[in-house]
Image (cartoon, rainbow, N blue to C red):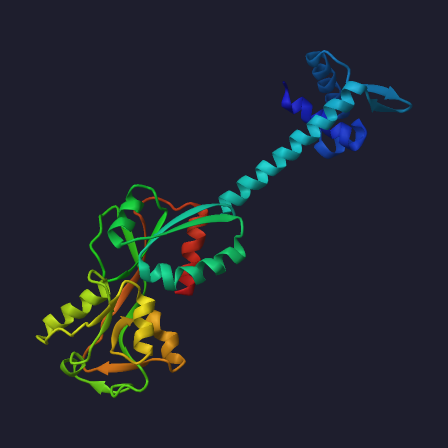
Length: 295
């Protein structure tokens, strides 16, 4: 079927005559008439018939006009969809993220993003950094986020640091060290409430003790969840060594207090990772740009 001729017929049917169709399409009336007659011959049926000083649709023409209206309405929808997809207003973003950004950063970023791009679907997987890099390399994720020490990663991955996050020692407000400055050795005399073995922050604390030749702290209470460990410290037991992102609001509200340990300042790197030399899909690029502005 000649879709160009069908489009001409559609405009004639929609506007009610060849004259108006000629004006809209910037095609001469004789040219339009000739193409429609050729189209009628191709189809083997009459679509238009004389009606007074104008034309009218035949029964076959009226039926075809209805189908053509649906077809070209669908064409407009397709064009709109493609325009939105190219601009990043539609699409599906797959994110792999480590615990820290997944729990304390990505939800706020996504909420703001979805306010602007509600038709973009998103899937977020919380995992460790090695698996996040694997997902990115295997194209199971479009973007990866990690928080922690700057890690070695394959050359095929481009890591962009968004900002650095401090690690804090925190205690309950009634603790003797609350808001005080103490030595690392004195701080390590306190019982610590920490996450399970294998936690990156716990390993950072133990590495710190080795670096400064200080005995490792006692960890008489450990939890598999970070929230539970923090709640225990708020309740008045022990100390914690934790990302400021996690406890900043507790400190602001006075539920926890910092302990300033002399000459110690450790940071996490919060980074976004993409595949090197590969352009991001428009929707994912919009998300990264928003996060850059937020960070």
